[in-house]
Amino acid sequence: MIEKFISPGDKLELKSTVQVTLPDGTEGVKTYRTSVYNILEDGKLELVMPMEQTKLVLLPVGGEYDVCFYSHKGVYRTDVRIVDRQKVNGMYILIVELISSLHKYQRREYYRFNCIVDVMAREMTKYEEDAFARGRTYIVSEQDMIKGVIVDISGGGTRFVSKHKFTEDSMILMQFDLSILGSYRSFLLAAKVIYSGEIENREEEYENRVKFEYIDTMTREEIIRYIFDEERKNRKNGKDC
Image (cartoon, rainbow, N blue to C red; front, side):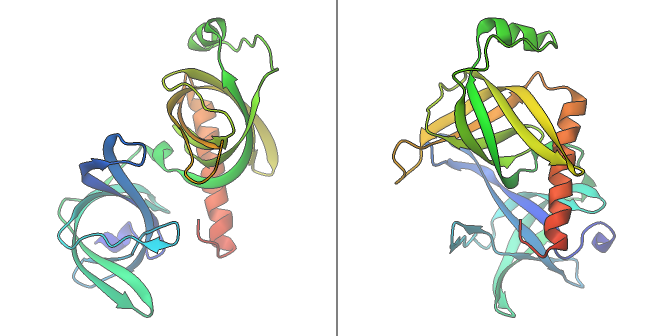
C-alpha cells in the first residue's frame, strides 16, 4: 500500500518526538534530512542513515520520529519507530516501521532546500514594517544593506550567513533573486530573526535563521516552485540535494 505514495529515492525529514538541546543552547526538536533507500515486503522502510557534516548520525534503535516524505505525489506524514540498523550494499541503513497512518501533509513550504544564493539584508524601520503589514512595499533606503549568502530556503523562511549579527526578534528587510522557470525573479521580503549567532571556528561570520513575515500566497508559491524546480534539476543530474 505504501508503494502507491512513497518511492525509493524520495527525500524525507525525520523530526525527533522529544526536545533536545540545540547548538544555540535552546531546547527544541532536532530534524534530520535523508532519503528512502528501499521499501520492504512487510511494509517496513529502509532509510539512508542521516549525516551531519561528514559524520553518520547513529539514531537509536527504538527511537520514534515524526517523518515528512517529499514524494512526486505530494508531501506525506507519519510516525515511525527505528527497529534496526544495518549495512546494505555498503550503505548504512535504518529500518523503520510505521506506527501511525500515512496521510497527506499540505505544508510543503517547510521543506528546506540547500542552495547558494546571494542576499542583501538590514534591519527594518518601523515605517517600513508598518507598510509591509498593510500589504504595501515602502522602502526608506536601499543603502546600508549587509551582504550575505542564503544556504537554505523554504516557503516559510531561510538561513543565511553574513558578517553581521542581527538582533533576535527584530524585523529585517531581505533582497535576493531566484531563477524560476529560466528567468530571474527578484524578491524583497520582510523577515523576523529567529536566531543569529557566530559560527564556530569562523571568526566574525554569523548564521542567521529568519521567518518570512507579511508574505502573500503568490510569493510563497513562487519560492516553493523554485525549490521543486531545483530539486528536479538535481535529480535529473544525479546530484544529492
